[in-house]
Image (cartoon, one colour):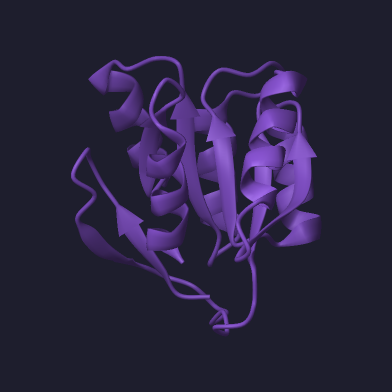
Length: 145
């Protein structure tokens, strides 16, 4: 898939390397990584309503996110920043360096610029607040794919 990177609140486009090109009839394959099960289930429910998206896995921490990304090869990982065992920044760094073609979108309740900067430096193509509207998340997923 060829993904487009998103940076900052206005989400300008930049090239993100990939190895697969998603056909127009293929769904965007998503991996959800968050240590709160209720949030993962809520995101999965929200995203399953989108005809062009499919949640293929859910991880409760950064290590599980890496293992599932290796096994499932999703198009996009929605990555919480603060998780046990391995945080989202370290998990993002490992996924983006090892698995080309997977776009990581950081999600956090933290709105500090340094957290967004750290996620982007680790390879995330976007960083969104969990307090933001769901339409922004859905638009970001589509924009990177």
